[in-house]
Image 1 (cartoon, rainbow, N blue to C red):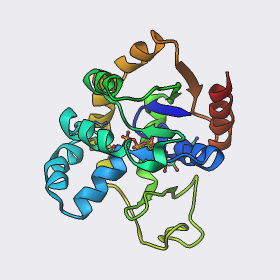
Image 2: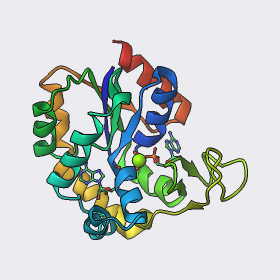
Image 3: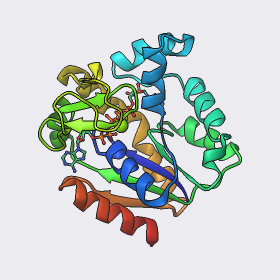
Length: 210
Ligand code: AP5
Ligand code: MG
């Protein structure tokens, strides 16, 4: 199954992508994680992306379209994939249409803006493997250490409250129009994401079946 996860920053795309990945054994591809890895490795792409991410803006379309075009050609995508954070603009969605892939479902995880700030301020991430935690809602077994790979957990720079407001504005302006784009294709399903993680997961799995 080929899936797209849509939703505001902090809606829980990464969290649900992990659950679907476990259930269906298909890779979760997060453009945010790929870009953060490039920044950590100080690659040319990372250096280019950093100022956009730190300002809560989107990285230019051609950069992320190139990332996804290459990634979807890898062997592990043959039986399906989950796109977490791509597409995020209409031109990105149109570029995906031109790639040789069929999208089965688009799950939009809906969480009101007021709930987003506390989720993001408490988030801690592993820059090595991309696993996500929360100081209140999803604590690692050992404080500050990733359960999956043992690396140190950090707070994302763009999770600071002032940048979160910019990210939300960017989302409403540039990404939300994708709901209509995919609704018109008949493949959009809306999932209520403001209850506990397990509730959202149950709704997400249901939305994959209907
Ligand atoms: P990216 O990393 O994709 O950030 P984002 O879309 O802003 O989404 P987040 O990762 O913040 O949220 P999420 O929905 O994954 O939530 P999570 O599951 O972690 O992108 C970062 C930046 O990269 C962008 O701003 C942009 O600059 C650039 N970029 C990336 N893709 C791009 C593209 N295609 N085009 C252009 N630029 C691009 O959950 C959040 C927290 O809440 C966690 O701590 C989690 O544990 C907790 N949580 C989750 N669900 C629940 C729940 N139900 N109850 C309580 N807590 C919960
Ligand atoms: Mg994420």
